[in-house]
Length: 216
Ligand code: SAH
Image (tube, rainbow, N blue to C red; front, side, top):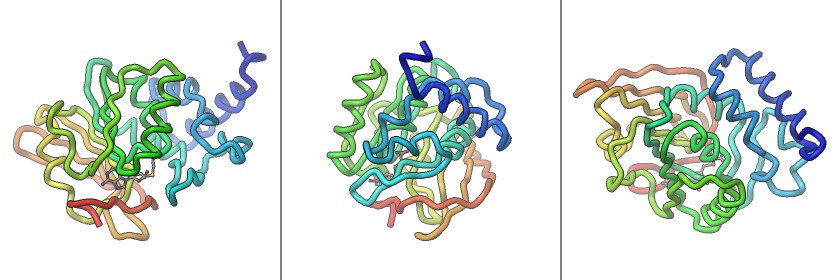
């Protein structure tokens, strides 16, 4: 197995690094071990695919830092039967991690070329539980709502897009998103319980801006 996949050792090392940074969610760490990040980065970046860093993916966008992907995924507390919504497919790496942890992922990207590229890689990996949507993710995707998990991988303003709050399950729905200004944001977890919302801030982070009707 290892000799067929020259990147397996690097993936194991990355999972260790993320664990040492404090993430103890075993299901998420396994998903990191199983997901070939080198396929999601441009060929000239492959050597750096398993460093714990964000990397450029073209179209002025980036693939997020793996430890941040792992933390945000873990904050969603997904169960295998849950449905999740992702805003900002980008490279499709975060999408692939989510697809291993729940029943169905809806992933919205506004740039069609990125969505199509991600779709091809997901197909190659045999991930069949992803619905790729091209459009404005700040509007969500009402057709399959409510979602137990919503993740926004672009920096939102201080105001959470109302359609996303509406489409979050009122039975312990978890939403992870960066809220703040264009340059830096606070990673925020929102939990919806009935009509109540609970918010908790984690560390500071830097995402490309969330554009669209309820974005910048
Ligand atoms: N999860 C991705 C991160 C990509 S960067 C990864 O790890 O690769 C954020 C992405 O959000 C960009 O591709 C950008 O085009 C997209 N984006 C920004 N605003 C959006 C919107 N309103 N709807 C959908 N996608 C959006």
